[in-house]
Length: 274
Image 1 (tube, rainbow, N blue to C red):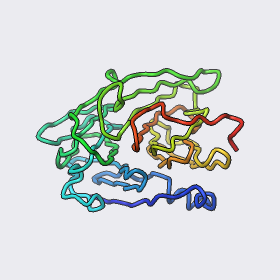
Image 2: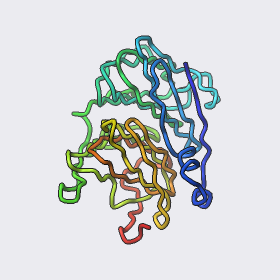
Image 3: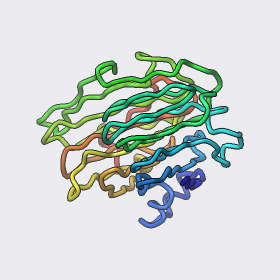
């Protein structure tokens, strides 16, 4: 079963008028991991698609997505699949890729239908592609790593860069994963914005009783979303994206837009936040 929801782009002036319900309706990502279903959100931010697939004992195939306007979803797109669950497989272009938790699979433009199977909980990210690059399965030991923060600042964390220029070539997608150390809760603070790229977050490995407070909005007038495990946020280019949890967690970050320069950001000073 395939379900697709469309999210239109919201400008910052309009976002300032939103109450909690409206903020969640436009920017919250939830309910995408349902047994036996593929659930997608088609955004008008750089045409990024975010979604989930949970096979639940029977294979699920992603092929035609009407919102993309092509016979098959990857005819003019690239995709990254992240397994956040048990062992599973993803099949495309005549190959079967075995994936364990934490693996990321890049599928090239033109790979055709994608079939998910096994015990995996598969997070799906897709953006339009202008070229065809080699398909690649990237395990965490192959990712580029950056260690940031400190226990004293409650933000000791390791950033794993998977689909990233230091690791492989893609068209638009830049995707990685950040793990917080026990006792650390803050991510991406000091905050930044990048007007040339949108970003999507997914928080997981968060205890059922814990929550992540995801900060968004313009630096001078911030907003927040309260997120449970396996929920996330769509971050417009004009918005900060940072957060803190009531327990340690892991999150997946994904960007699409004009370039793949990870450092192409505008930093926001702490005293500029409101």
